Each structure stands twice: as structure tokens, then as C-alpha cells.
Image (cartoon, rainbow, N blue to C red; front, top):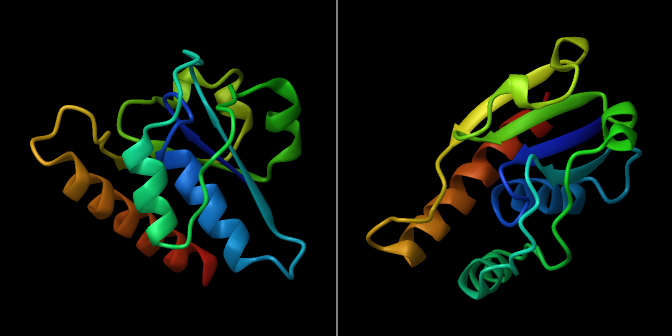
Length: 132
């Protein structure tokens, strides 16, 4: 299967999910890509990149916005974020979509802890989903 992981800006949550999924499925025909609903050209957060790397997950790269080619490529869309609605995806009724509702780490008291907890939550969900 081919998965499109979506979050708001494609700077953290969806990137972690796709990178981790691809790491688990290196030797299969399964694959994942990630994208955001919006593209704001902000750079990736250094703490998110560093902490993700400590989990063996490489999220470096340029954020991407959901586009028609991605929507045609995927078999399943997984909205990783709690701040993205199905209706924000063009022609959303034509696709199978799962929503995980994982909170953004911005504006939390202990950002580094929130980043770690978010990565653990995404890993747990990908692991469960990957075993289907």
C-alpha cells in the first residue's frame, strides 16, 4: 500500500510518520510520502530534527504541500494532525482517510518533552497500522 501522511505544514508530524513507515518497509513495495495542507516556507525546527534523529528517524528535507499527483498516487491518506480536517483535502470524499488527531507541539510548556511524546505516539500508531 501507498500512504500519504498529512499534517498542517509538513514540518514534523507527517514527516515523522512517513519516515518511520518507510524505514520499517524498506524491503517491501509499500511506501509513504508526507505533505502539508499549507506551505509557509518556514525551516524545520532544530529540536524536532535532532530529537527525531535520536529515534532513528530522519525528517530533514523541504516541506511539501499536498498536490494532485500525491492524491492520485496514494491508497490511503492518514491525517496525523488534530488541526487538519478532511474537508481541507481537495475532493476528500473520493479518498479513504483516517484521522489520528495528534496535537501540535508548538505552544507547549516543555517543547522537548512534547516532541518526544509526539514521536512515541506516532511510532505506536504506525507500528499498529503496519501490522495490519
